[in-house]
Length: 198
Image 1 (cartoon, rainbow, N blue to C red):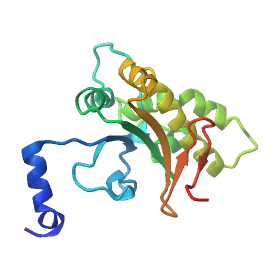
Image 2 (spheres, rainbow, N blue to C red; image 1 turned 120 degrees about the horizontal axis):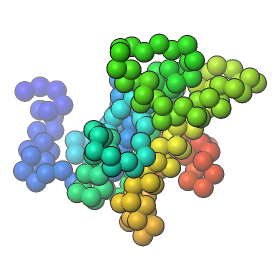
Image 3 (cartoon, rainbow, N blue to C red; image 1 turned 90 degrees about the vertical axis):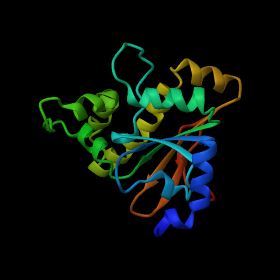
Image 4 (cartoon, rainbow, N blue to C red; image 1 turned 45 degrees about the vertical axis):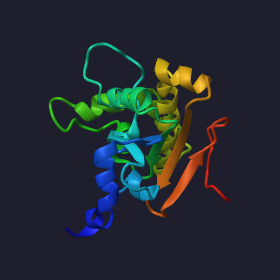
């Protein structure tokens, strides 16, 4: 054995025997450049991570369809009893770029990405119509607005809403700048993003 597994063999063995007990759920993008475990410098078993295109959380819709993100959220909150949920977006997100491109063509007949990015369609249209913004400003704006949108959707889940009202769970937003390695944190009251310590 070599690498990380050999270095943390005892930790993996303990996790195999006792199970996982992470306190934080992170909803992140599946972009390979924005790995939550690396960004938060966490070890095995410390984070419960859900990754999807553009780190989106759909609204609560128990309609009998497949809902991977909703299922993971339900498991993290109801079974693992996480105390914190972080929705973490990132710079230069391909899903967000696609949502802002009115000429974007489906990658396949199923258009799974197009349908998924429909979760931020209204915000994308509003930001796209702001002619005063540059393309990169639009991109960053939608990356951050989509985080706030996902947090609003999180709160449509009864289990999250009730636990947050009781002070048993906290919801956070964060945005990772791939080019600088900086993590920006969202102010829960204003929705503004800032770099901690500045």
